[in-house]
Length: 132
Image (cartoon, rainbow, N blue to C red; front, side):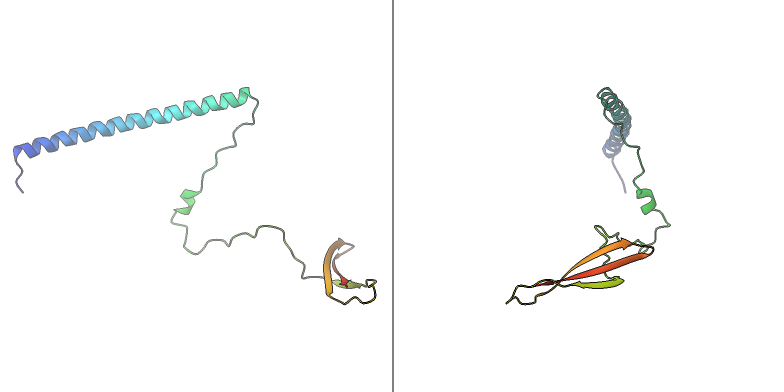
């Protein structure tokens, strides 16, 4: 494909502008990093003068581990369960507590209350209180 002399001059000018902009970009990145470090040092100094607690240690985010070749799809751990561990199904003993019901009451079932106690061995007792 034939390009005229004007096109060659324009391409060379664009390449020169591109090089100049890349160099300027590199210098600005270096200066930006330096300013971030200076800013953090000043923040740390202010915190020290105010007797604030120091910054927590920097920990890697783990992105490198997630993108490594070792990571296999589907080998992810199941999500942890949050909240209390309501393990009430393993009662070793069950006791029914009778209630004094007024005359004319009707039986509505039980309310369960599980008590875990440590006697020489672990024992879980379910007390069933009659509800009238």
